Image (cartoon, rainbow, N blue to C red; front, side, top):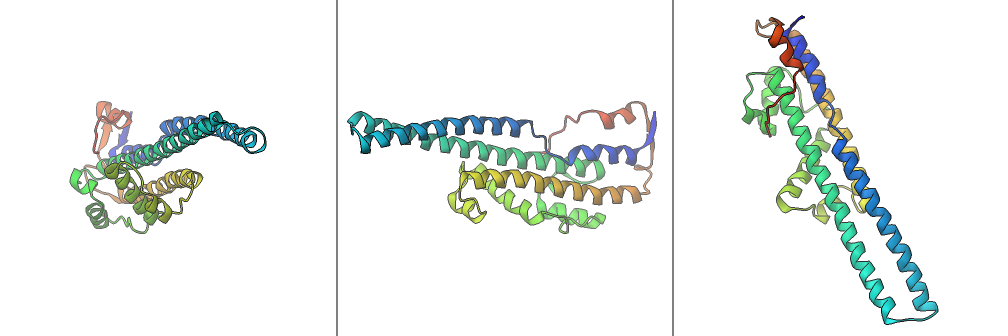
Length: 227
């Protein structure tokens, strides 16, 4: 089989428009199980309080209610921790996908330019790719800030979550889910712009006809890590 290099690259770049959901699905499943446990504890607490206030108040009930409150606090912390892990996973996946797109489409880009936002934007601007006009850029920047906070502070601060409209666990869950969709929209739109540049690239390198191993390597899994 034979094909022009830029056509093979164009096909390969589509692999990096989405973020794999396997880990996110496992995390969601864990959160659901934890929430079921929380609901059971709340139900038990309501029954105990009903007995305590309307029948026989005992020290045993008081102690059990305290234990339940501690368990619920721990459960809520577990859920938030899982969501924070999802934030890191999504952003890490975004960084990897972005750098794969850049390194395949523009072999002359350095890992440093691919790693820093401003350098990457300027590099692509010189190539004719307007990053800033891509959809969800602002959402991506805010998500990046949250990711950095979780990485460096070990947790998401309540003030930061409030600023993002996350006043409850459910708000945080929705935010993480929506952020994944926003980042995928950004990657798709950026990739479309990169594809235009590739199509118009008349360099010898990009228009070289490949076959054999050189052809097949564009279908092989990449062992490179840029993050």
